[in-house]
Each structure stands twice: as structure tokens, then as C-alpha cells.
Image 1 (cartoon, rainbow, N blue to C red):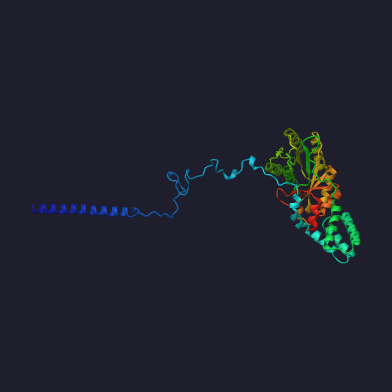
Image 2: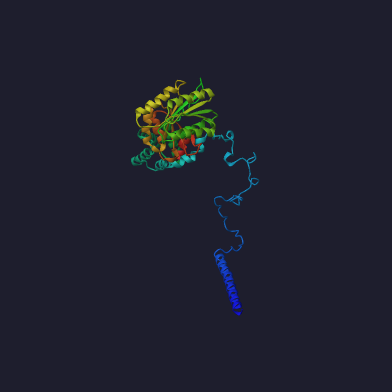
Amino acid sequence: MDTGRVMETVILAVVIAVVVLGVLGGLVVGSRRKKPLPPPPPAAPDITAPPAEPHVGDEAETPRDEARRTIEEVDLPDGSAPPVTEELPAAAGIEIPEPTAGRLVRLRARLSRSQNALGKGLLTLLSREHLDDDTWEEIEDILLTADVGVAPTQELVDGLRERVKVLGTRTPDELRGLLREELLKLVGTEVDRTVRTEPDDRKPGIVMVVGVNGTGKTTTTGKLARVLVADGRTVVLGAADTFRAAAADQLQTWGERVGAHTVRGPEGGDPASVAFDAVKEGKEMGVDVVLIDTAGRLHTKTGLMDELGKVKRVVEKHAPLDEVLLVLDATTGQNGLVQARVFAEVVDITGIVLTKLDGTAKGGIVVAVQRELGVPVKLIGLGEGADDLAPFEPEAFVDALIGE
């Protein structure tokens, strides 16, 4: 009996030990499993931190940009506040060019800045007490440097020498008046410098603009449209320079600014066809003037002659040309005369437009080119502004040369 109780007691003790060990082992294992993944402690939100980027699959429950305005806060165009890109409707966007009457007088300061050396140099030399041969040679040098040309320079010097000899004592005012008279004689005051755009027997007047690319020919055509519009004329532009991709776009932009219609063709197309269509549409629309911008490539005289000759012939199926204006860059000086000769051989030039005259001190080119071609300077360009093309006025030009 005693032995049986002892055995029961031992077995019970073993069972209890096993149970206790199992419970302790489970606790240890459980605690080890929980320690690597402790629950994150609650943290206060950081209002300065940028919002977390959403991951693929996340729901866009809130806007990413917290500062984005709601539709109620956005000013929508309701007629009272038009969008910035449409500040002016198309019709109201047409510009009103500056009047051409007296435009050169208003631009005289700009012209005199570039030509000041010529007038001042001449007046300084003429003011010397004794005008010897060396002084007259210096006067000749100043005139030749200003691109007046050899023959006109000799005429001016001979005239000045004769009048100074007769005048004797010379006050500054007398010298200025004397020089002004001789320069005006050289430039010419009796020549008709009107751009002919109003034929008596028909409409529209037809003007062809020619010149080497780079002289400002297309820009000048656009500015001339502004001159005509400022004088109350209606205009159609013909973009017959089809060989330069930007020429038609540039001309159309100039036209749109003053409400002038532009006729254009495909890039590389037939210039004569564009010119023909421009005159045709000008007649149908009843406008006053058609301006035709032509190509200015000078690869060969033959090619240029063929091209411009064809344009002229095709246009004249409608009506004769009223004006052929040659655009020259005044900064090229005597080199511009070479270009002028080529164009004069190709077409009958009726007038000259001198551009960039404010950018050179060689204002004598006005005299030289007139002598070379036997046609007058009718317009001059005095800057990059849209209304910086002015009718040429000899008196204002000479006054700018010799200053006040």
C-alpha cells in the first residue's frame, strides 16, 4: 500500500512538472515572437512635413495639393474679367498707325545722332579763318567717307568754294545756311517723292517691293502697309517671297496688325501665281493698294531676272505696276550700290527705300544711290519700331545732318 501511494505521488509530481514547464515554455516563446513586431507608439502629426506620396492602388480620397483652390474660389471668365490671352477681341486688336505727315521731323533726333559727325565735321572745317587746299581736301574726305560719292562730292566742294570766296567773312549762321543750301541742291528738292498708289483710272494701285534678303525687305513691306493705312488706304499684301519659310508668316503678322488681308501660297510655290492672286483678290475686295513682297535671292542675275520678270508680266495681266520700290540697307554703303545696279537692270525701279539709316554715319548714300539709279529716295527707315518708316523729306534730312 505504501509503495503504491509513493508511486502515485511521484507520477503526480512528474505530471505537474511537465505542465509547469509547458506553460513556462509557451510564455517564453510567445514573448519572443511579439518582441520583433511591437505595435508602433502613437505619434503626434507633423504639420510641417510634406504629405506622403500615394502608392499605386491607394485611393485618392483627399487632394494631393492642399493649397489647391476650389471651383468657387476660381475667377471664371464671365464677360467682366476676360482671360489675359484675350485682352482684346480680334476686331479691336487692330492697331492705328502713327500719322505719316511730319513723321521724319519727329524722328529727326534719331537721324541726327547717327549723322552728326558729317555735319559737325563740315561746319568745323568751314569755320577756319583760312580755307586752304588742305582744308578743302579734308572736306572732300569727310564727304567721301559718308558715301556721298566722287562726282557729287566734287560738285559740293566746288559750289562751297565759290560761295565762300564771294561771301568773305563768315559767321556760324551764314556758314550753316550756306552748307544747308548746297546740300539741299545735292539731295534734290524738286523731285517727286510720292509713292504712287492711286492711279486715276482704276483700283487698286499695285506696288512691287524688291531687294536682297537681309536688307529688311519683308519688314519694310509690312511697315509700308502701315504707312498706307495711316494715310487712310485699304491694303492687300501678296507674300510672293515663297522661298523663305518665315517670309509669308512675317508678312501676314504685319498685315493682321493693321487689318490688311494677306494672300500667300505654298512654301516653294510659284511667286508669280501668288502675285497674280493677290492682285485678283485686291480687285475683288475693292482695296486701294496691293503690295507684293518678292524674293531677293541674288545667286545669279539670270535667275533673278527670270523670276522678277515673270512676276511683273503676270501681274500686268491685271494692270500695270504703279511703283517698283528697291529696298537697300544703308549700312552697306557703296556695296549697296552694286545690288542696286543689278536690280535696276532686271526691273524698272521707280523709287528707293533706305533702311537702317539711323545705324550708320554714311548718310551720303542718299545722294549716291539717287545719282546711280536716277530715281529718288522715297522712304527711309530709322529704327526697329513699327512706325519708324518715314517719307523722305530733303529739308528735314539736311537739317538732321547739320544740326541746330
